[in-house]
Length: 276
Image 1: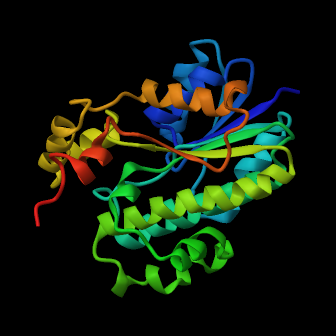
Image 2: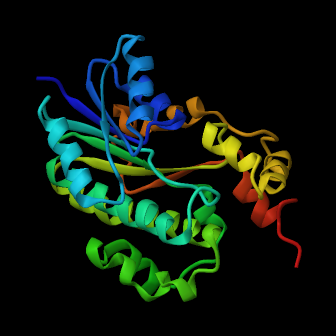
Image 3: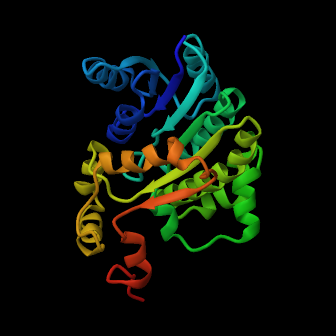
């Protein structure tokens, strides 16, 4: 029996993290598209990893539980890398909330029930949640601790209170970060840690969709005017995950690390600040 890593979302960021820290482990990669999962599994298996692809729909608790059941066939689950999700250009409001907000909350909860002692998890949120006006402490607490099956019934998430897909995405990512804080407390009871990484613009096929989509100029302007002056790479996100999930990060849990080339800083205090 091996230690098992669950990787959800067969994309560039998830694969970069899995390649960095998944050696010697059984990696079960779940994606809504089995074809995508098979592609990542093939690339990694041909590089010496041990990867099994699986179909998984993040918006379905049953599907998440099936993925966990599959993973447990190989040994104890010691790592979770959640890089699954949909972007504002890819899906309507309802889907974004169901996948990115509800699905992530369910995944953290279900893996938290079985994660082994000493286990670690990271979930990928987004800088986007940091560019939304602060919610009230009461709203933040609702996002953090509302039972998962009641999350989508929260008043602030009803269609009349969500302006557009970007707003839905920002709410989902804010919820991810609050959920990670609350779940980290529960994971801690099992001797496990959980953190969140909030990337800025990272060049992936999904990001290229965004660059070529209706908000393309917005994104190009963002990385031109952020302190780094460029978009990031999936491997740079993996650098952060390696810290968070390794022994050097043993005292870090319930945290979000923003890796955005300074875009959020520029949005508040620099050239990206919205003009009134």
